[in-house]
View 1 (tube, rainbow, N blue to C red):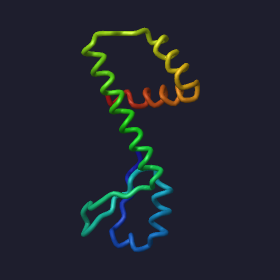
View 2 (cartoon, helix red, strand yellow):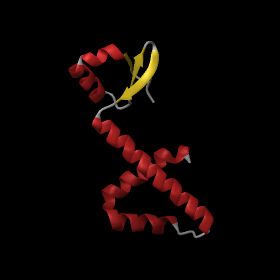
View 3 (cartoon, rainbow, N blue to C red):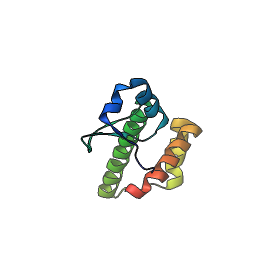
Length: 106
């Protein structure tokens, strides 16, 4: 994770510059007021990506909780084959890569 970009609130007056800055950064930008963090801003694209990641993580976490409670296990190859058939190879690879990248949060 990169060091977050921080800007003072008075820079919000230059909307074109701030808009471009948001589009150039994947992470939220911290806006300060009187030297203290006051709010964060980000591009819609970044917001939607973060929201989708949060939703997917919540679904995965809930699934793991249910799995632990039910003690019902399925073979990994069978599971991934089901995903391939249901979502196609490209979507399955996106899911798999995202799952591996989020594993440290479980």
